[in-house]
Length: 257
Image (cartoon, rainbow, N blue to C red):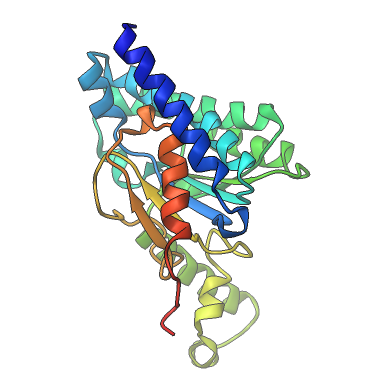
C-alpha cells in the first residue's frame, strides 16, 4: 500500500468517526434490508475469480452486522440468494451455495445474532435445510439482532406462498372459500409471510450502483426508504453504511399523510 492509499484510508476513518459522532440513534432504522450485490463485478475488477468474489462478499457480512449492533439496529434482512440465482451456471452456483451454507453456520456459531431463514425452503438442498434449521435452533434464545437470511428468496414467490398458506390454513380449519374470501385482508395475508411478527424494513440498502429492487420484499417494503450505493458489496465500508443512516435520518417519512 503506497502513501497515498494510506492517507486516503486515514481520512476515510476520520470522516467516518465524524459522521458517527453526529448520528442520532433515535433516528436509526430498526429494520434494514440489504441487497448484497456486486461480488462478481468486484472480483472481475480485482482480477479475482467469481468464487473469490462470493467469498469476499460473505466475509463482509459479520463486519456489517457488527456495525448494525453498534448503531442499535434490531433486525437485518440479508438477500443472499434469489430464486432467479438458481439459473446461474452450475460451476458458479455450487460453490456459491457452499459459501452461503458456511456463512449461515458461522453466523450461528458467533453467538451474537438470532438467525432466521426467509425463502422457499423446498428449493434448497437437504444440507442447506439442515444448516438453516440448526442455526435457527441454536440461536433461538440469543438476545441480539434478528438476522433474516434470505436464501432461495423471491418477493413474488413469498406472496404466492403466503396465499397458499392462507388457503391451506382455511381448509385445515374447515373454512369455506366463500368465508375465506370475506375474511381476506392485508393483515391476514401478512400473517402468512416469511417475516410474520417482524417489523417491515425501514431502510433498504442496495450496493453496486443498481437502482432496482429485483423483487426484494415486495410486500414489506411498501413504505421503506431506499438507499442505492455505487460501491460493490465486498468493498462496502463503515463510512458507506453511516452515510446510508445519515441519509435515512434526513428524510421525512409521511406514510401517505
